Length: 327
Image (cartoon, rainbow, N blue to C red):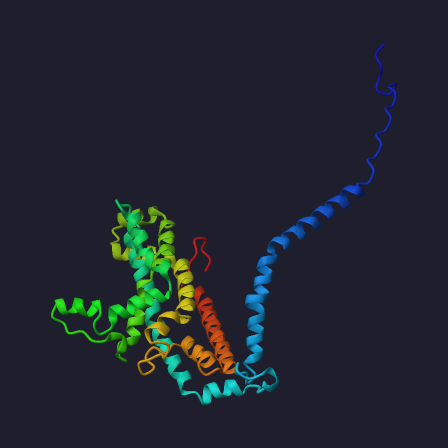
C-alpha cells in the first residue's frame, strides 16, 4: 500500500550552520594584510613625495617670509612677513622685465608649437610607406628635451659665424649674431621650443586615430571640402586632446630655463632679452644668495600658473566637446 503524504515519517530538520565568526575574522585579517601590503609598496612613492616635494614646498613657503640668504647662520634669519612680496611688486624692476619676457615667450611659442605639432600629425596620420620612420624622426627632438647639449648646438648655429648665417649667405642674405641681438635673442629661444614639438604631435596623432572615418565619408558625400571637414569635424573631435596639450604645454613652456640659461650664459642677456622668470628666480637664489626673496618669487610663479590653469578649466566648457555629448 502506498504511503500518503500525511503518513510519511517526518524528516529531522537540518541543523542551522554555526555563526561564521571565524570566517569574518579571517576575512578582516586578510583585508588588513592587503592594505598593509599596499602601503608597503606605496612607501617609496610616499617617502619621495614627502622628502622631495611636500617638505621642500612647505620649507620654501616659510623661507619666503624670511630674509634667509644661504651664507648667514640660522640664528641671523629674521621673519620679515610680506616684505619680500612687497619688494617684488614695488622695488624690483627686473621682476617686471622677466614677466614681460616670459609672457611674450609663452604667448608666441606655445601656440606656434601646438600648431606645428597638429599640422605634422595631420600629415603623418596617412598610412604610407615609411611613415613610421618619419614619426620617429619628428619625435626625436622631444627626447632631447631641454638638454644643455642641445642648447649649445643652438648657440653654435645662431651665433655670428654659425651654420644658419652660412645658409643665408648662400642666398645672398647677410646674417647677424642672432643670439647676441636684443631684437632676435628671444626669437631663437622660441624657435628652439617650437622645434621640439614631438611630444604633443604624438598625442595629436593618437587623437586623430580615434576620429571615426564615417564622419569624413558622410561629409564627403554631402560635398564638404577638406577645409570644412577640418574645422567642423577634426577640430571639434580633437578638442579634448587640444585642451590637454594646451594645459600641459603652457605649464612646461612657462617653466623653460635651460636653453635661456645656456644661450645667455646665465645672464638673461643681451639687455634682459632672454630674462625668463625662472632665470630671475635662479639669479636671486644662487647669484645674489637671497633665498627668502627667491622663494617668494617662486610662490608667485606657482600661483600664476595655477591661476592660468583654473582659467583654462573654467573656459574649457565652452569649446571642449566630448564624444558623449557633455562639455
